[in-house]
Each structure stands twice: as structure tokens, then as C-alpha cells.
Length: 175
Image 1 (tube, rainbow, N blue to C red):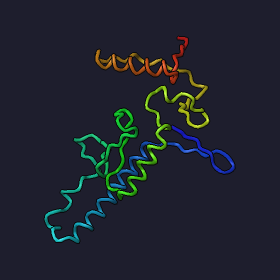
Image 2: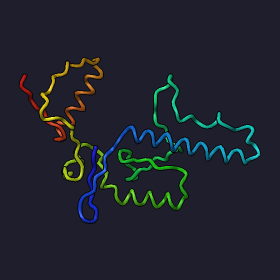
Image 3: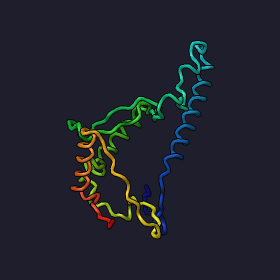
Image 4: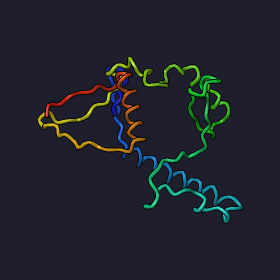
């Protein structure tokens, strides 16, 4: 994914890299662990704590790689009384900072896309997903994937939502 944003004298671009983001996350966990180890070694009950109480940032081969938050998250209703418009923020902020963040989010809740229909009207100059394809290479038809009926129904519902919102469109290739 690539996002474009205005900068002085032109347009800036930022491109996402999932592998680099994961490496950055693991590094942040490791640094957090080292800091916690230093803090716990300075306390009187450091013998009770240690590496066993701090999660391992490198997942075992037996467990899947999942991203876990570094702290407990608070669920905030941006429109009080509307459980559909919620977001989460960190719980370790100072109370005044937390109040400022919540107030800022509530003031600007109209910029969030709560449904697919809310995404209409975003200029492709701002953000657009594209596939890097070589024009000289002929497309290859992939075999049809078969899913169990429950998953097939969910997939069909999602595709219908995206089609009705105008985010995707069906194309036909000659065989």
C-alpha cells in the first residue's frame, strides 16, 4: 500500500512493508524487555521476577506469529452510546494526555471510515492500491479455489459489499 500526502513543494509518498514492520515490532519488544529487566533487577523482589515473566518476542516454531499489544488497551466510544464507533487507546498514558487524545478523537470522529460506504470519495491521488504487473507478461488463469460452504458464504458477502460500495469491479479476460 502506498499513501500520498502534501509536503512543502510537492507530494510525499510512504509505502508499507509488512516484513520491515514486523522486524521493527520485534526490535521494540526486545528493547522493552531489556528495559523491564533493568527495572526489575533494581527492585528488592527481583529474585521472584525475571525472564520468565516477560513474553518472548520471537515466537516458538510451535506457536503462530501473532502481534500482541505492549500494554492493556482501553476501548473508547467516540460517540457515547454508539457501540459501533469505538477505537482503542493505550492505558499507560497520563490521565490528562489520555483525556486530550480522547477529546481529539471525538472532535475528529468524522474522518474515520466506519463502513465501506464511508470510503467513497477518497481521491486516488491521496491513497490507492495497485498491483505491480509487467505489461509484457500475459496473465495466467489460476485454478478455482474451493472452500467449505460457511466460508464460501462469508466470502460472497464480503465481495458483494465491496462491489456495491464501488471499491472493486469485475473484469473479464479472454481465455
